[in-house]
Length: 115
Image (tube, rainbow, N blue to C red):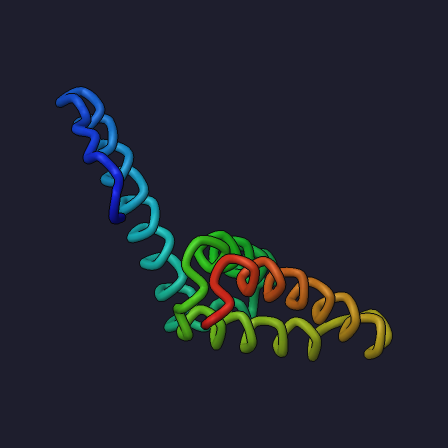
């Protein structure tokens, strides 16, 4: 910003930053690929463990990048399928999953309130 001196970082710091960015990018791409695979195959409708994995991976990605609408839609589909298959009372199942979604939404809104 204005009035600040530009601090030049060493080559070692630049290299560390580059490696960290590449690591984060690799993790993001692999998580997104897994989510897309789960979403397209609709495996979560048959296997609850796949649904849990899809929710976990998408929550991790959304906590860092809440603007990805595809993941929000995938989470909605998974939760609706889990609620339909639930052995619990309907209201209890709804409350459990909606509480989880509200907590994630709160985290995402705190990170990026404009999305």
